[in-house]
Image (tube, rainbow, N blue to C red; front, side):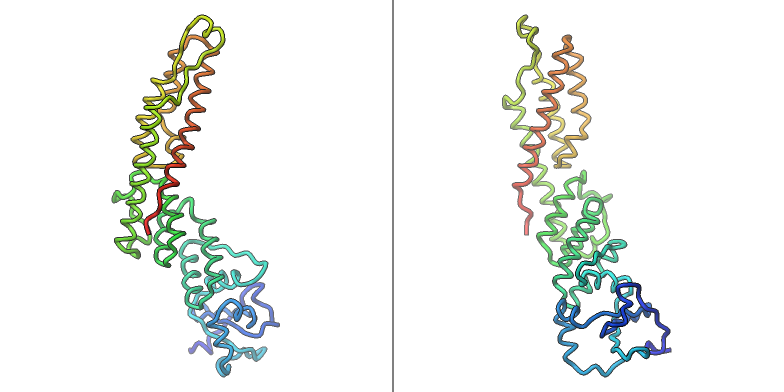
Length: 297
């Protein structure tokens, strides 16, 4: 049975509008999408040029509207056309769906649809699929977006080990993978240097309550903080991100040491408060240092 004779179904709203003047038919699952030439023409120079040619091909028996067979699946067509329609919101079922839509956008030269697809991909998938998105953006030559994904990948500890094989790795060049690893390492070095500068400076003052100050009882957070900075700096080298400092067991260890080494309950609170403030300062400095590292093009 030919494509023309295959039974077809009509897509769900808004692509079931019989007022449409063109039908896109998926040759994969034989679903008809009723749409409008003006929308396709505005979004795609390919369709705009196509509509200047005589439409002597397939026609819908019910409405005599021209039918254009396309190679994309109905799932891909639905997501793609929703990106073209004003006031419509599209979502992707998964990354494979997103990639297919991006490929279709490129095929039909739908630049605005591609831009919207990329923005949607970042919103939907970036936190949990940084490496896959890095590979996807590299494939499409989207270097700025690849840099965004590489920054998110700083959350990954020991990036580059065999356990971090990811979907899309075989689809990028060795140079692209090298850039990812080099950026991760450079950010790690920058983050670790922050810790070194803080441990050698006077960034953690002596903390004591008024009574202890009057009695000249001195409690200093320096020793505990220096140990925390030294240990956490090694962690930052392999995972240069804010989460490393928030999740570090050495921070809890510093808090415990501070509490155990202080007899005054008021000073215990002040020491903990001071170390918390120091960590917030530490995190800000690390974020600033990492932000200065440029993703290699």
